[in-house]
Image (cartoon, rainbow, N blue to C red; front, side, top):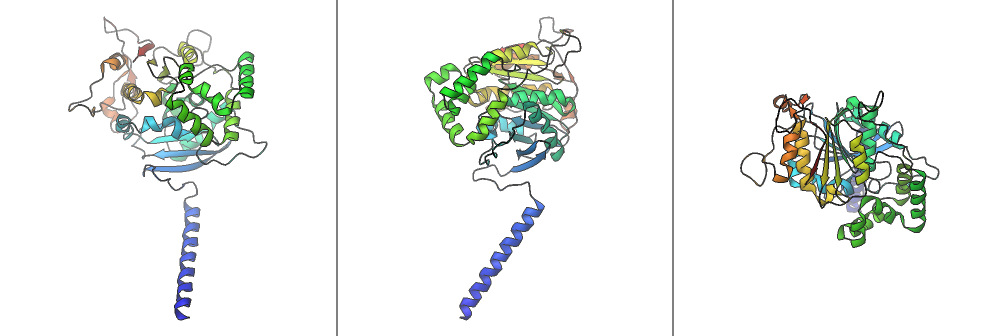
Amino acid sequence: MKVLGHRLELLTGLLLHDVTMAGLQELRFPEEKPLLRGQDATELEHDIETPYGLLHVVIRGSPKGNRPAILTYHDVGLNHKLCFNTFFNFEDMQEITKHFVVCHVDAPGQQVGASQFPQGYQFPSMEQLAAMLPSVVQHFGFKYVIGIGVGAGAYVLAKFALIFPDLVEGLVLVNIDPNGKGWIDWAATKLSGLTSTLPDTVLSHLFSQEELVNNTELVQSYRQQIGNVVNQANLQLFWNMYNSRRDLDINRPGTVLNAKTLRCPVMLVVGDNAPAEDGVVECNSKLDPTTTTFLKMADSGGLPQVTQPGKLTEAFKYFLQGMGYIAYLKDRRLSGGAVPSASMTRLARSRTASLTSASSVDGSRPQACTHSESSEGLGQVNHTMEVSC
């Protein structure tokens, strides 16, 4: 009986200890969640309060002085894992991100394990999704960010930069479509929703027709993950809102009176056979050619960050160097310093050259000066450049 009593007392003590510790953890760290098995140990999950509801955010790494955070926003049908894991886990990309803190944002209800929204829930508009981001920036104390967005996420980040230009240092916009849906497009989307499953409808937005016809292993994988990983009811709400978006109100400076455009450096990216190609080309025509780079990637299909992470990493490296944040990065394949591949040499030459790249190493915000790629070499303004690589 004494032994039994001792065991009961010990068990009770352990339970009380567990309950007490759980309560302390809930009190002190309400926004942090335990990491899933296989996650990077430096990743932390947060649920951030915003004017339009909670936003799920994953922080990777820690702030590096006054350098901007890299903030990502995924496409519709995906979440930050499905959209960006391949890109950010690429070895050379990790060589870049060790210089920055990375902030992955999941659109409301799109993260892994998200609860289904209640009946009648009003999903935020695309403008409201953009207006949620300052709460994230403020919560973590970021001074400004470099945004990487894909598809719907690219639209959200562009809108964010238009509304809050002082918070955005640069943008990489993959597969952006600046146009709202017309009546014909709207009707076609509705018809597609009646004749196809939601995952298949979303796949036609993500992948080229050639990829879908060939039913590649990548397409099959994403069809399965979109159907199983993302909450379908929540996805439908996001899909409906994206297809109800308005035109992105931008015009190239000098084309209309009081034209609004993105004030920060922008790199537009699209695959050479992507469904978003026409939209990206039109977006390029509406941006300032002195601060815009247009990168068309060969053999990359609809998700260049997944199918061509190496090429996109290299382009991103030169984009950052152009803003003066990274003086050089060693190439893992070579014993010497950074040497661009032949396919990206033109991109390296024509990118913005920083006047203060040395000071940017310690975190100060650089000011950039553009130089053109021309036979004369001096005194000319750099224009939007199309690079196929």
